[in-house]
Image (tube, rainbow, N blue to C red; front, top):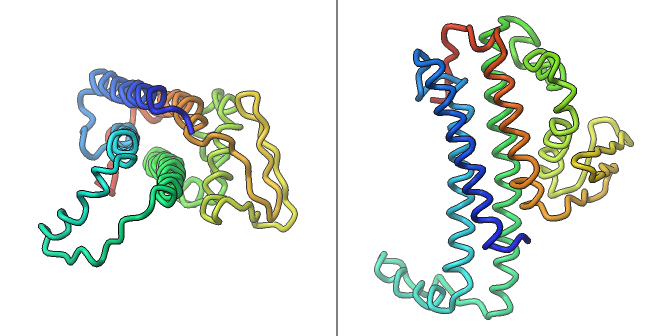
Length: 244
């Protein structure tokens, strides 16, 4: 796991870069609605994920390792009107295991949520800008959707998109790769690192926090900028995000 003094400032920087990109885009396109236009909410959803990740890492750093926080839970439960018998304070060895599980949970959750925000937003955009295309934005083949939205820039992001897609699918299977077609093994090279997706095996991502916040997030922002700045997308009158 990346050290807290390194990961917390990095997430803050990434979060601020998405926030700045959103504000810049809004200034260029003042008629777009901040709260429900998909070209704006695609940034907002990512900012919210980074805010949640920051809260996790601060809680993980400043509260979870401390005996005092664990010791306070019994009293907090009683103040809530819940019997403290429901909570048995774990041993220090058990706490280490709990913290490892919590770290894994948050890192993989952030990975899935970022890709989900990107995918859901691009489907909204494609549905509005190119009505009827790709089964009205419902098609399973994401590569074609991104090629349409990114145009000549699509090749730049192919490895990133495939890593996100396959990574999301494996995380739904506790990290094990189960392709739709048996034996359909894949090898993705991203940022000079090779990721092997082998049928029935756990995928090795290395430090998922470093991969997500140091490598993927900046490229994801560049990808989103290319989508929202493409002429067909930018010139569309309104692209309402139905989730908002």
